[in-house]
Image (cartoon, rainbow, N blue to C red; front, side, top):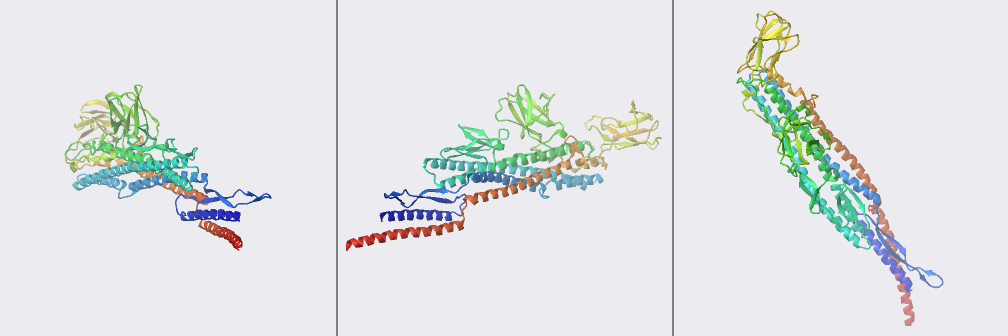
Length: 625
């Protein structure tokens, strides 16, 4: 009878604990990362009664999580990738909205400015048209500045995300290390602790990406994609932010190791932080550089064209736009006192990429800051022979030390510094500075074209000149010459030239002289109105209009691609979650069936105990009698 009681008691205790486990599963049906638990039963060692063995009931040998390690690893990896793509898509979409929205983009004001130049070319003497052009120019320059400000705000937002992300990574890494220590101390790890650690690992990977490795003692180590350790056993590394050595206003990530901050390669991080860094390096920086390149080409080209005209005061046109110089920033760790000053040498060769220049073994080398690709450098760096790299000229002051480095930003900050240089509408150089006239008594059929300004800085540009043809193929200028002429070749003087349509006769004369103050001539305005269609970029293959369209398209394409990728990864993550839940998720129908089965077993075990009690009472009653 004692055996019956023991058997019933063992069953009662086992089924009670099994019911508790089922209830625990049901209670955590909505707990993120929870893995359902199962109890493994085993028969107790039987008793030898001489003629055989009699069973002694049941016992619980294990309370285990129902997990598939491969499904969990797949879910963690897909979660990190989804977080990266969602972050990248969100920020790229915002930049795309900034560039493409008519209220915030540049295209509308760009068209408005060149429309105003065209209107001025139709009525160059009208004060209203001049004032309108000046107003449109200021509006366009302000829009460039506003867009630069928006880019800077997005960059600061990335920095803020890095600070917050580093704090969160440190919190999660510390939690995983603590759980590793707690799990390692236990003879058998509690399932709930393992679930909690898996959840923290998933969250950590969603912030920083990377991989996990399980070591002896059930500890999980977490590494970045570049191999840097975030968690090793019970030790957690500290992720911190440090100032960019070239641009102190920009933050980078580093790991604290032995009292030093070791910078992390931006390409070695995934998750939300990786999405932030990828957006900054692959979308924001190129867009900012291209916007600056457009502003630089506009300012330089328009200034050059404006300098070839004459304003209403009879003076040659000055700078129409103000432009900042390209930036060349020294690395914070440079040992020498060398400094580089940069200027634009060839706008057609400027591509907007940030470059790193290094002084090593008595020579300069350069490479792309984003990709590391080598870039050709020529020149020595002195004022007579500046360094020439990607359309930029650099002059060295001071003496660099071995391995000193400089970051060249040809266009990154140009848009924010673009402004209109003039305030007086009469200073707009709409007129051609020179006109050519032919006397009515010329005998030939030659008719001159408008004068072209070849060198606005020529000292003799505005000095009147008389061209006289000695015969049909020779001419003199103010008695100097003779100079040969053939049909189609220009007649050239001090910084000017014009062509002849027809054939001149001997004695034909042409006079070239300044148009003078208050002229209504519109020759230079006509040239300026067509400037946006001139192919001045990419070695003469791309116009400014094409560059603006290309910038808007490239940002939009990056936003769409990241959006599509995030959408696709969302589907893959959903599949990974479903695969994990199919194994580890709590099924209420299944738990209800288990609960009913265990409840009946519990009742049966109680009935065994009740039967044993009845037998005891019967035996005791017979003794009393």
